[in-house]
Image (cartoon, rainbow, N blue to C red; front, side, top):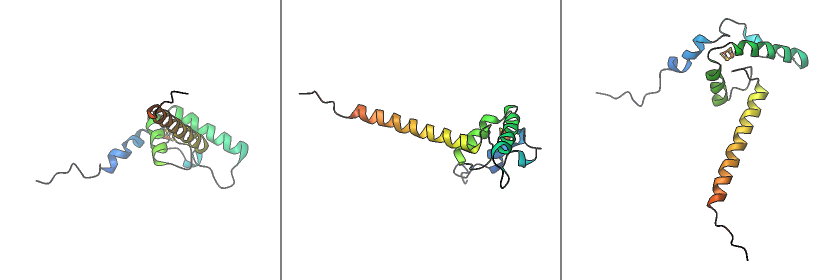
Length: 113
Ligand code: SF4
């Protein structure tokens, strides 16, 4: 009998959470900027999208997806693209700092002299 353990997970299981999304029936233009949108118009649209995200039962799953997959555009999981970039940069810096700390801990200590 052939094993199915190594087959990829069915795609529906990866995306099932979207069936519960609060944005499911909302115009995507609320979540994604249109060409030329800037300043206050962008801020107002993003705040509207984030208010929807705040009510969403799958917000953390959505955010995790957007961060893991590197979604470049739009509001996902209550974060706009710039906020996701900042969060990822901060997490990478923290990871680098932690690994630097642990690597330094392994270095031989000077006894002075
Ligand atoms: S968190 Fe926001 S963008 Fe993500 S599924 Fe929910 S409503 Fe949509």
